[in-house]
Length: 238
Image: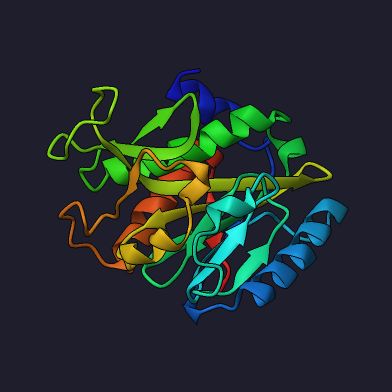
């Protein structure tokens, strides 16, 4: 599926209101974020609220998706661990990481889970592109990856790659929640308490680790531009 196809197929039906775009300052407790997402998703599904993208940061924590393997939680006492209904395995969230909770009504767009995940990956790739970082998707690994030719090659001789963005979604009544996270400048050592997404052969990186000295506000601007290219117009709702 080409990027242009994703951008066309994920646009809302004509006449749909713009997606609300909310940015929270400070660190948002994970329990509070889940409760708010539940409330918003129910309202969107009932037709009493417009779609929403919510940008925030969490305090340091680990989340376990529906496919998480307990053996991948290496340091269970390091940070709080939350079981969550999203797909995927263990993920870290913390300061310096931009989390985007994406609550869209796919009945107004395209009722295709794989296409939706690919579109979210496309949003991240476009965001990184605007900051001169080449992100790539992999057919066998969800998320967005960057090649690291300066690092030692993998055991099979292939080029080293690091993950820069994670995705995990859930749908209820065709309304999405959870979403994506982009590593802007988190403490990368915090990822060592888990096997991120159950994949041990690859590392984790961030924009700052790659030499892009950007602020969170800069990333937010590029992320919004990329989201609108794929999913349509937004309106600030803070």
